[in-house]
Image (cartoon, rainbow, N blue to C red; front, side, top):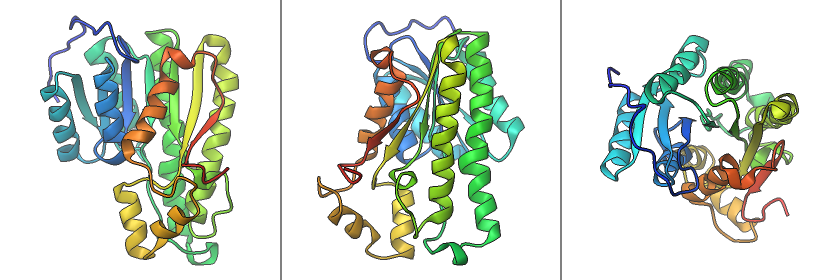
Length: 265
């Protein structure tokens, strides 16, 4: 990781996230990578975190080649020390933390609750709920110690708002994440720290590819129930997260913003 701290790097003066330091989990691919690219284009200095070093390096280099400011840190949400170290790396590099997008998640093989298994349930809990809890703990501490005020966005799922018989563990942990988001918003709002979530519908990521492989036709069935008739691009979810992280949503906290093409309408 031995990059030289760049806290004195000139900061962009235009853009939705100009001047902000943003930490992004699950940034090596999918929605997280799209978010990191977008946040950098909008003027943020971005710290990308995920488990896979090669993916992180590729996205970081892409952002830099486009003129953005980014670095990366390997992070395993199942390891509290790893999470804290990644957040601390953002502060070490950029001198502060203003915002975070907790995007990282794991998946389960589609199937009803009685076919899910305790090991799968435990794993989905560890990454999708406990991992986000740990990340928020570290992020809140860093925001308090540096910027003083800030914003956090958690990546939930439209599957957290509906019955989810095909992905019961995933849906349950994402619904719990919505509760955690609301609780954090109420707890930290008096300090000027806003906490929201986005709830994507069907989105064209590797996660959907895995579900499609396990349950052929699941994407088409979801699209058929979606008024806009298609899946989202990762960039469309990232745009919603960027708005929630920006000062333009300054009176929005404790909400779960549906970005689902009307699926929940």
